[in-house]
Length: 233
Length: 293
Ligand SMILES: Nc1ncnc2c1ncn2[C@@H]1O[C@H](COP(=O)(O)OP(=O)(O)OP(=O)(O)O)[C@@H](O)[C@H]1O
Ligand SMILES: [Mg+2]
Image (tube, rainbow over all chains, first blue to last red):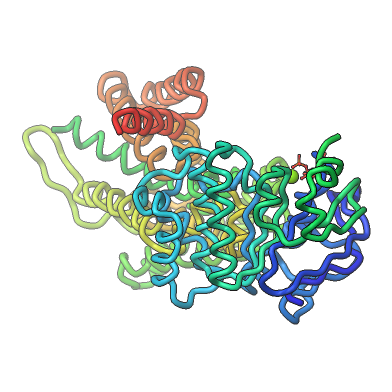
């Protein structure tokens, strides 16, 4: 088990959003967290990377208890966080954005850059362009590429399909799948895009009002009936 | 010629006095009301050392360094508890400025013996020009180049720019933003101390000399906007021009008032200052470039 979340409660100031959540993920798995708008998916992701404090419960990552660790140290322990809305630095160039990822782990940086440019040739063409002037799809790829330059152990993706053209989404899914299988990289993905969820995930947790209300197998994820019931209001 | 000299004078004064303030403001969103007193501290350290026989350039560098260390301590002790609370930090830095000013008065009286301006002067026609003042203009340019280099071409500069754009995402990528802020505050303070050291030989040293720099540095930063480099240089240039023109034709007082009036008008028209202006232009150019592709 690479990530284990035990009875975690967290939120903003005094409003708790994530309520007693427990999940666990094995190395190399691609797992989705699904749920409607505002149920606390992003809040959970921010808690995992450490941008929000854990009020109670425990988070273990790669054999260490990281519950009290600050975000920048969690990143360095190998967590690649890709925030909702992609969170690229708009006034840095594509290349500078990619360089930011190398803080996660500075080994073999040059090789990692080449790997990222292989997965996303679009980024190689636009190295010197300001990231803010790229399209939604390009920004999504940049935000994933940015953490890959740091060779992380897990990817936390928060709605990577947001703002990405529908016909590009499945292409993105293919790349994420390829990255995960080629690098043995674990992926925890928050998504609402049914196609992308069914395309790449092996199992899923359903979040509602901050709590896990169901855990779905791959067969259940592939069942349109079941998945629609959890995604629509 | 004398117009150019005057412009160089004003430009270097505006840039040197504003750059530290502007880096702290641009990076951290903190308005450091003790900025003038940091400059004063640099001037004091430099003057003490210079009158004790330390060569002036060394004294100035130690003045900058000392003020930087002082800024670092102030950040750790006070400012770091007020990140994300801009209003409280204004009050706190105001308090620090009062304490520093009064503290100096109590410790060293209402003035200390100064050093004279080195390097002498030369004249062309009617005009008399101080070599040291011309050197200051060169140094101002070097400071701008150095700051540009640090921000644009070093790893720490990259982390600083990322933190400035989005501190929580920068920290989720492994940047320790508290450390970044402490460094920024120390660096801005050191630049203030450097300014104080550089101007120490040109003025009489009293605990309230900070106020000589305060108005100019604030106006420059306000007109410049949040981009410490582009904003400060452009605004220093334009304000320097305006001020020189008014001073030459209508006297020093008109120069100061004119500076304020221009700043107020400018801010009415371009609320985000030169930084916002440059941003807009750059965006338009990027869009055009893409339209072509
Ligand atoms: N900074 C904040 N301060 C206070 N409350 C917040 C903050 N951010 C989000 N919330 C609240 O927390 C709840 C969960 O928000 P969250 O962003 O985690 O939802 P989500 O499941 O990611 O939704 P979406 O699918 O729209 O991204 C919402 O009720 C939201 O209003
Ligand atoms: Mg969300």
